Amino acid sequence: MKQFFYLLAADLRRAILSIRFLLSACGVALVLFIASWGQIKFARDVLYPLGLGISGTASMLIIAGILPLFPFATTFATEWQERAVRFWIVRTGIRNYSMSKVLVSAISGFLTTAVGMLMFVLALRTRLPLFVESFTRDPYEPLLLAGKPVQYLCYYITHYSLSAVLFAVAAVWVSTFIPNKFTAVAAPLVLYFVAHRATTGRSIPQYLRIVVLVEGMYPTGSPHTSLLLKLGIVLILCLLMGYGTVRQIRRRIQND
Image 1 (tube, rainbow, N blue to C red):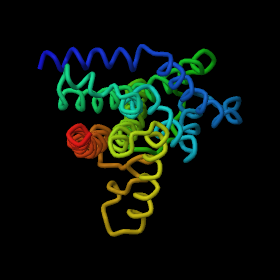
Image 2: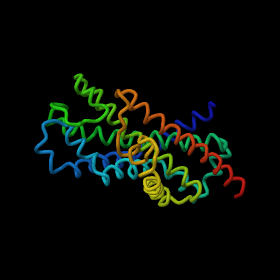
Image 3: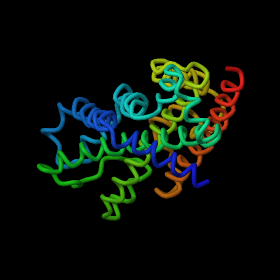
């Protein structure tokens, strides 16, 4: 266990204390600026352009589905191509190596989106108040109506950053089957569109439809339970993909 935490700490440093992480987070902020640029001058508070920047499908998929993958989610594919995987596994073991890859990809994916959104908020905060009037109508709006805009912002950023976690873990999982970093970046989006087609129009609960899970929000009666619902679904899916990642890496090593 001690060895695992040493490896986890080393991978976290590689992921977060890197130029890739900084550029990806800045990319998230830039996408938000581009998506909301035409309305920023009319905005009365920061939350309005933030919502506009997130609401576009294209910008949402870039913010959560592409940019969060670059800091760390493609490292298994790169290490496999460079034949460096055995170097790490001999020293750490297959399970420790695989679990670290999944956990750090999830953490770095979450932080990439969260930090990028926070950069956007702080930049606009220099000229606009955080919150003046609510137009959101989302499950976290009761926090605004209760005079808790900072807590609302934390819930809002966490909600969409969890979407990035899903894509980042999917990228690691896919890369164990096709160890190519370009495939690792593109495949999660392909899987998303396939799942979108498969779950749209089906008689399943709305919160299980991938478009709602990734791009939307599902009200459950309170902000806390709404966020916990998304956290629970994302956690279950990530555990399944993480288990698949460990098995596939073990199979690759044994057959290599």
